[in-house]
Length: 463
Image (cartoon, rainbow, N blue to C red; front, side, top):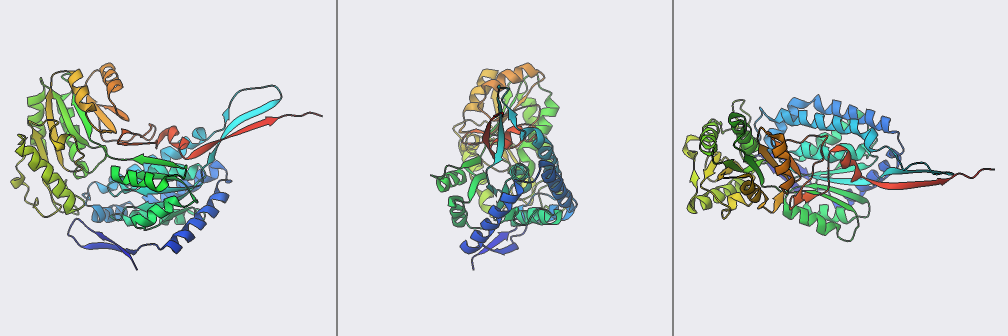
């Protein structure tokens, strides 16, 4: 029987083994999902909200054990993984609270002799294909609103984090959600593609790489279903001359290296006004040297391993190529004793004297490296920020909100930050442009992609 094996990046051990679902098992799971959804969509919205709030309660009470197993699955330091559970709770409760307004009937206005409105109907079975880097925070963006909207959910997590899918299902069961409403499958890429082709799937919500997004679209070709794609990023930051320097340094270093840089909206390139450049670079390098790289189960570790050795080797290659092209490294890897070639443990690195001929400034790194360039004006910064195939988020560091808005209007991106980065506000839409994807999660707009409009045109006949 084909088996899923999760290799922990901490020590290379097999942390999880699970059988992969067969075609017959997938068919049975999908049949239960279809049956459950038909009854669930008829439940009043408040009943759905009560049950899903209970699901959140059941989930967060196990914060400590969830955090520890997440650290073992993907390598984030244990001092940070409980934060993902807190983020899960914040987003879940926010989307539950938004549902009443987001799903309310749309009154199109009076017309003599008629009653007219538009209702948001659930689409059916939603397949959520979630990644390993933020397995709960990405999945919850679609799972909770899909269920609130009256859909059922089939959850397929990355093979690096299969226990996360099981945790969702466990919480649903303990909360008393109807059987079959929220299920998971451990499936191969081929089986997942077959599932997308199945007539029973009505919508796909995918978070992952650009090649993975293309595979989703290929599998859904000809199905005429919604495919939401949250893909890669090469997210930029611009530090203007009027920025609070210390605040910018502290937040941008964290934005670049949190989760070992394995964040789709992490900071991967920084452009600094020439008047602040030298001070910014010096302070950023000093702060980066204070990271503690090591076993992520230790409380003092602030930087864990990348998810696998191949990912670390890719970043090593980007750094090596940049150095050979004239870049300078500001962090001595030898001071991070855990950093070792042939392992997923990699020291953080800041590169200067970089330009856009180097892949480290144009190709997604997904690791603990960031390049910093000097700029002379807003115009130069905007041109460099837009010089990318990606457009997920962009961060502007300034004391002038009007300037941030004006610059933000010119940046090709899904989210514009001022004086912060690497964060999702559940009240705001989460979306990308160019190769960062399409579709929307979070906010009231997120519900639009998980429902379909149904018009009611009622003529009143008297007598």
